[in-house]
Length: 365
Image 1 (cartoon, rainbow, N blue to C red):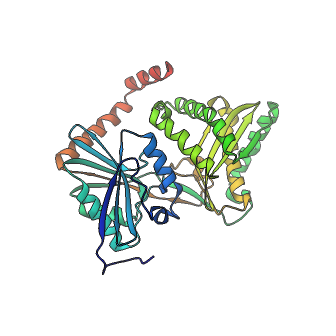
Image 2 (cartoon, rainbow, N blue to C red):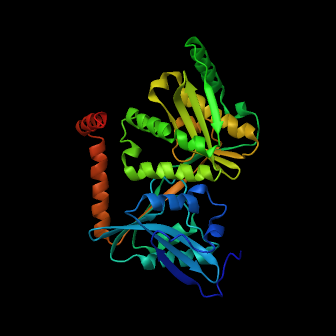
Image 3 (cartoon, rainbow, N blue to C red):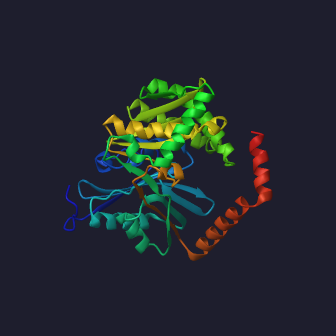
């Protein structure tokens, strides 16, 4: 596809509603992007977040040159605009075929923002040309570093290559503790869609237990987040794109790694351990098995731990892919009010009194 079309008039199209993504050429434009930026993922989010109106802005000259998959929600006078997939998406993109298309797409998004609005684009590449063009064009904008994504580039098919000496020693100690407890880890990988779907309630239970153990509000207490989790995993499993690991200890689900088969990359989107098995390092056992699987499978060239620079990810990572977040407002006053609200919320989260109340409320659920 030609990268620039400076000599051809570029047409702007704006589509909204549940079927906004049903555009000829969109799948081709999204091909090769991470699975979190392709139609199956985006449509699952649109289908499970009915309070958001999907809004697809495209630029074309007979073929699709660029697309901004967005969503809008109005609350009072404020129109909140986010990327489709806002929240659970670790790697978001605004595809454009070249510099001219990127500039035209940024101009089209800017033109589509009306009245009182806030625009949030999270987990985007730091060098995304559309984001850069928007940052240069919008009047009240802030660019921040977002969560990096630790990645293991597989250049050697021996798993121990990616494990430090201290990690190997720790794994040996874990193995000894399991033997002393009379436990044999039951590790199982499955790509069978029916099996994956049948396991979803157990995965969500462990997911929630882990959130509570970390003193966090459980993700899936939000019905839309819970519905998205089930929907997106099932749809990708039916398409043969889920590689699910379960670890059982004494027959109990102790940990899991929900990986997505994304071409030659295994992307670990959700990996959790059941808190009751934390002392036996169930999470480390499962994550080490995920690394071994990706390295030795032969079908993968990388293991993407996805967003979050936690120590267990960094121990094996060969690089960390940086990401950025753009926030923009229609006015300086709105920006000040929004940022003041963010600071107040952050202060409330760190208040010992409010933290104790939050723990009590969550314990009653």
